[in-house]
Length: 258
Length: 305
Image (cartoon, rainbow over all chains, first blue to last red; front, side, top):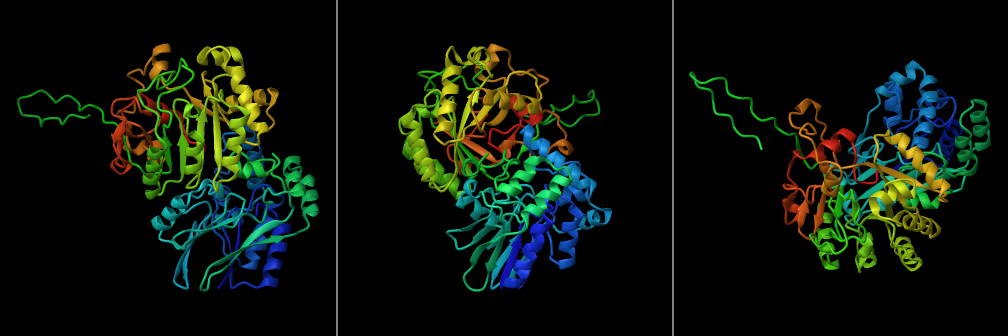
């Protein structure tokens, strides 16, 4: 089985369209989005409509939960005032421009999904199996902890997103944890591409990450026209994160520019 | 501890109300193991130190490299996510770099330091250990004020200048330290972080990271100002108000050369010790300490996140 996993869309409808086209070319038996449709980018309803029209199943990320329920902030829990400021700008813009129908749809989305492929128990979630807004960074999770997560949640493969940076760990037990990253924001690697995960689940598990080039300049211009913060636009044009930096561990942070 | 109330008899006055019970915190999972590797040995004797560490203080001895390895193995068997090294001052430990190298093979590590002992050689070594590891190495440097007058009041003359020099050297060495700022006023945490970030940039740090912590009325701080008042207690907090995910003792334990403790704050408090081995210290903990009240009210965690 070939399974495509898409991380946060963050209202980047240009990247979502390019990812869907890439998926159609490569072919996958199933595709799922692991949550967080809104935030950061322009015109949030455009991404929701693209995804709903494509019939891609979707999990409820913390952003979808917050926007769907009008909770007032994104629930990322920033304590850095600059991160908190930009997170609020992003949330307020998105919540005000997401239609009531899409909010109702978001509220009804499942938080997790489980299925079995070739005898492997697969668990899909947004942040972690135990908390929708937990950040699972590659450099900050011991093998022992990931093994425990698999045990505690009865899974042989856990897939998550939420952090925006993709990674895969083949654990000593033969189980796997995959973070699909994000298709709405570059991976803080100085490239303008976004990334999704493509998993082969027959026999041995194979996990690949696919870079997707898209018309990032068109997105950047739309963001400027919507008067979204220049800091967000800079990320789209350079591939370096300028905000939401607080939770990055030293390893992931030192790879970036800010 | 609550005392059972005898059943009322027909002739007695109404029984006095039972003493208010404390909420009980379960360990949900061992996310963080705190390792008090330097015991109570420190090159400074800060006037607010919650465990009263200082030069020559060996109430909790240094932990040997083999002892740390054994504790790390115990924690890994329980699925620990990350390790924190503290003291005292961890960089007084003669084997600190080797201990970090050992532990970073198994999980992410954070070292809490006063930042006054960083030579260029040590920073180059730490960079080498960090770069060669699978996991993140975090260095957390404590500040008690954003200027010499405020900081040195707690830590001794000249310590602010040495710590800032240490922070600059860490950044130049490619390590991105987290500055842990003790909130010595009632300032709002967000405002306090904002002020700290601005001040650190003005001091020449280009990518400052800041975490703020409240003061605990423990150890030397209880003598400098005051201990906990009787009203600063979680006694009687109703079950409906209690959120077991709020406190760090739901996800951590601390080890010193003297045993396993509920958290890194209560290693000198009666009742804080939970056993000799981690496996014996996984039970619930009654939140009867003044420090539990501070954690509850502020929602603080000693962890990075």
